[in-house]
Image (tube, rainbow, N blue to C red):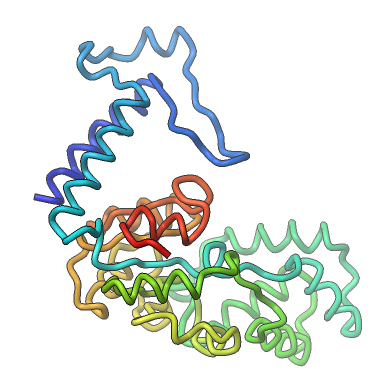
Length: 290
């Protein structure tokens, strides 16, 4: 029943999105969508009943969430899945700055701008050595990224840089109230898991940040051998928590990897920075007061 209700809402959202008849409120910097008169004329128009206003969409979402609260005793979901990088934690300093600072003593001469451009190019290339970028500790992949970004293949440089990103100095929490919120969710019976495209350094990193105990499970792509947006990693997280995918909602900052991937697995999904902007807001939408 819950999946049927979600499917109905998804279809309505999809129809409205294609027709550009409305736009939902977005966070700062989010793109707005429009279509030209020519494009609108070329596209088949829906019957009037299918033209949805923003208020109608919000009404449907509220109706759906109220239905779920009635189904689950006041909660919309039994489990919360959380993305790691970009949602739970972010780098404390820009990547190119760190690559440059640590690399100076190893002869790295590229500017931060050059390093960033080369990093983006390298990261965007197909990784042909494995169907996964992060295999085990991910060293092979990251050696390629570091050498491509900086032009330096010194093994000592790579090890210093690689180990730096396992320390609490390299990262900080996006939301300083996250721990309090997760505790409130778990006290209310909501299970919480990390779902992340990461190598095996994620667990020691969570320990270094003193937040590993916030989660009932951790699904790391290098361990489950599936990377977002592959639905398998979300299904594994649900399996670890002992819940069905339709009982879980995933929160992440990447529309393709987090939102589309989670929905393909049968989970609900909220885009961090748009649908929700804090973990307190996440808890409120689930039905838990912090």
